[in-house]
Length: 292
Image (cartoon, rainbow, N blue to C red; front, side, top):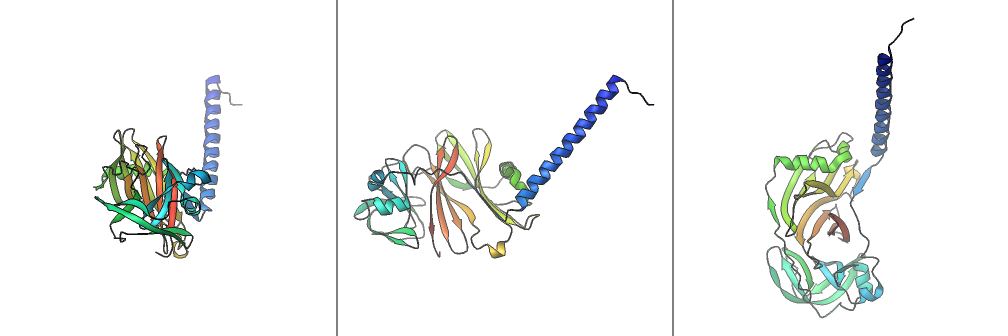
């Protein structure tokens, strides 16, 4: 009968413990992978629902945030108000002075003539025509620091590593990375960021594709997904969105620039506003233009 010393017995026991541990880890990984593979579509974003929880009294005095003549939502004393609350409750729907901004400059001060609802969305008619370079409009009574140092920049090799780090477990779907645009800007004077729009360059190992917006906070080198959408079957997914970055601007006057993105599907265009809250961006407003 073969005998072992105490040291060899301990070593043998440790090896068996490691083998069992790695088997359990493998089983857990396969379970997680299987669970993820069952999903045909994935949407990832952080949300804050304060805009829909605003009181009727507050909504009564709210004023609209307008992009491309679509009411994305409204503001009441720097608080977010949903578009539906604004439409149903606000008194500021006509003869309202608004500042309209293009990509580079303030285009001027004009008036909201009327507000109307169409296809479950809220729109405005203004005394200013809807030009292709129009970015947004806000009430002229709110003198906020609207513009941010925000510009498109060159793609760098580190951007690919940042995207991989941000995607984390979602990399199982993403066998390719196609960076479409990279922007640099400032949330505030002390917080520079880099924003990356990315898509699949080819189908992943499960046959699907994805689109995402990733933000890198340059002060601490942290990367986070702001928007992410995945679908297995693009041919039958007319609601699959391609995400892109529109601009940075301090819309509510809190000293931090909000991030505005655009999500395009086969038939619709959606504008999203993300507020910077405790070190991360949260979606606070989102509205869709149907049939665009």
